[in-house]
Amino acid sequence: MNYKKMDEPSIPDLLESIAFRIRTNGHDEKTTKVVETLLETVENYESIDREMVTVLQSYLGNDLINKDAYNSIIKEAEAGSTIVYFKSAQLFKIYKKDELNSLLGGQMRTIYRNFDQSYEIVPKESKQKIIIIGNAALANRMNIIKTHIMLFMQEKGLITFKEEDIVCFRTNDAVEIIINNYYVENALERDEIVKELLMYIFKKEKNKTIAGNLSTPQFSDFAGADMVAMPSDKELISTRFVEYIDSLVGNVERCAKINKAGNTYIINFNVQNQNAEIINNNEVMNNADVIIQNSGSETSEPEVGDFGKYIKTKRPKWYMPGKPFDKEVLLQKYIEIYGNISKRMFHDMFSNRIFDKSTRVTIKGVRTFRVTLFEYDNITTLDN
Image (cartoon, rainbow, N blue to C red; front, side, top):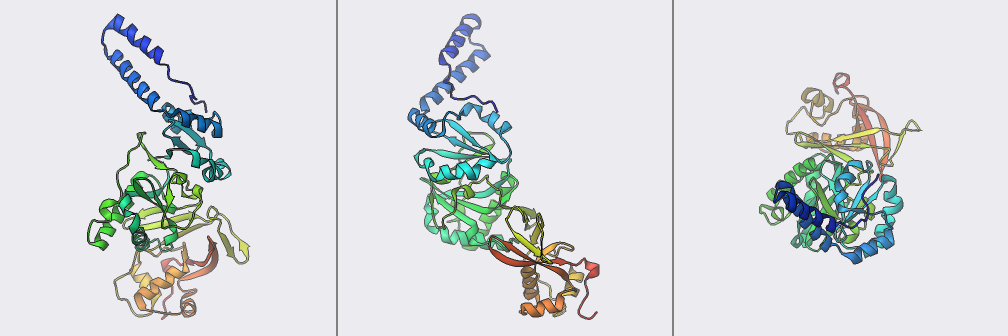
């Protein structure tokens, strides 16, 4: 990639161009544009922190890119790259995907503490984690906010969602909440989920104290992209330590994707990317897809105990024929409808009636079981 590097703006050339146009054409439209360009260039030039430029060069060398090359950066940056903008110096640094852990992660723990106003640039059309930015006054309400988020996600269908998936930061004038182990396709999907979350919090709190101070609009220097303060430039609050590199909004490498299915959220994640171990018949299976879906409690009252008949008759939205499914979720669905039952009895009653091919899975250190759900026509009921 051939970007414009550290060249100083040529103000004398611009002045000469203005003088020439005025002498030959008077104040035409092109002259006006040249004047506007000059004024913008002078403003940018004067706002640059020269000392910070020197500091950046001393640590990062000359591989820095001027602000005015932003459009080229976005168009030509490799997929999975992270673009860091140093606002006070008006310079960019691009980290390729394979440099995030090997280079950027270490630099954020060390030399980034010497940098001022560093931002991750997150294009609105890119895959990204959900980030919510709110008023700094909410810092002392973060625990209750995290509880609301966790319950909201679980009620929406993400039954594996836990409090540890929420990372909270405080900046000089705001709080930032990042859903850390999941991502959405773009900013539009992010905003839709945040809107639903804020409505949920409003209904739970019965006032606007929290919801009204979350999702504060943020200014960005770049059209079509958000500026998010780098993790090293803000304070972690109400959260156990998390590696800086893992809390970058655009770093979705080890995250599960959230898809919306009506009023339900579905998690799709590639087990290989999750560093999960899948064991089936003593063979390691890689690159398997695990889909977890849950649409909340059913309100109907089917014949007591006959889960297979209920599924065949009602065909609930959460049931996914032929797909791997969390066995614990299946048990909880039974309990929601019929009441408590032991895991052993549940297995004995419905194995080879509703599901088979039990698969043990370890994801992020947590062991669980997946079962393959039968097609509706293959389900047998208790009276068969």
